[in-house]
Image (cartoon, rainbow, N blue to C red; front, side, top):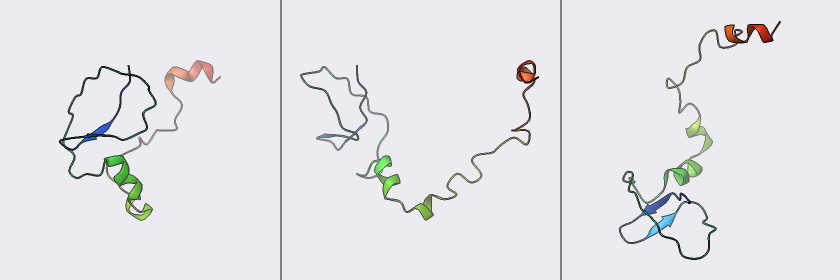
Length: 79
């Protein structure tokens, strides 16, 4: 069983990565969500300049103040 991410344009399926299988396969196609344009999200990320990518997770990711504090569960292994 293989999973392949592809874009469907109403006529054709365009795989988003190379497919290395030979022979005939039965397939099941599941439509997940519409694509806003004809460029896949992975391709869009590759084409964005690095300056645009910096800070794109700002205010979406946080780190606990005690992130580096020893874990109580690991105390016996750290002695």
